Amino acid sequence: MKKFLFLSLIIFLQIKFIIPNKNDFQLKCENKLVFQSADLSLLNCMVGKEATQNILNKDWDELRKGKLIEAAVIFCDICSFTETSEKIGSKNVLALLNSYFNEMVEIVNKHKGIVNKFLGDGLMIVFEFDEKQSKEEFMNNIIQCAIQMCEIATIVKIPDGKSVLNRCGINFGKVIAGVVGSVDRFEYSYVGDAVNIASRLEGLAKDLKHRILISKSICDFLSVDLKNKFTDLGMHQLRGKKVDVHLFGMNLANSA
Image (cartoon, rainbow, N blue to C red):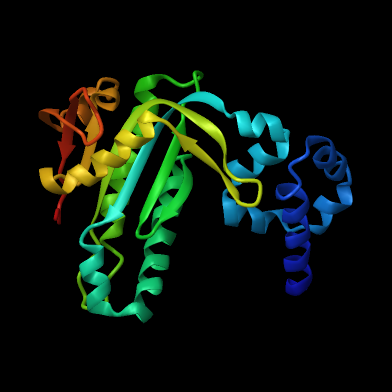
């Protein structure tokens, strides 16, 4: 049965992803047997439920054109992972990462976020803004997600008995959501300056010695109780940016 599902998935992916011609693409997709024979739940696990739905519900041209949306982006990495990897050996690295990611993805799903990418020991997480929700409610949920990610990470133990520590960089702004890549290999992704800034913040969090680093675009909309948990770090220059960015940092117990 597993072999059948795997072969069905391969056929599904070949029809869905490798045929770039819109007419052929739509013609193939009209064959419902293709979808019935593929294990879409497995596809959801491989590329994400949101990406699967976006890909299935849109034609090729629309996917490649992308759409402009507002979103918050979190980049989260494990502290001192290179050093840890050298200590525990390659055989234990995957086990550690899978244990850690299992906890992180569960938290992100709980907060209705999208795990868009696994980047070595890191994650790129996206929260698409829905105008039905207030900005305060939206931003509070994101910060609560980041706090829980940092707190729960400590239950994952390195073979030497120490807890995993991680850091998050978070930014909000306009991004393009759509297919990125070539005809032979592509993925559903989010790109734009807002994404780049979030990535820079995660990298800067180590130098500024904070577990969670956010931009003013996030802090401005937080409730008073959450905003008071952050320290105003002033203006900072980010690599590749001409304009300085106003940053705020939060530390937690067991901070690196």
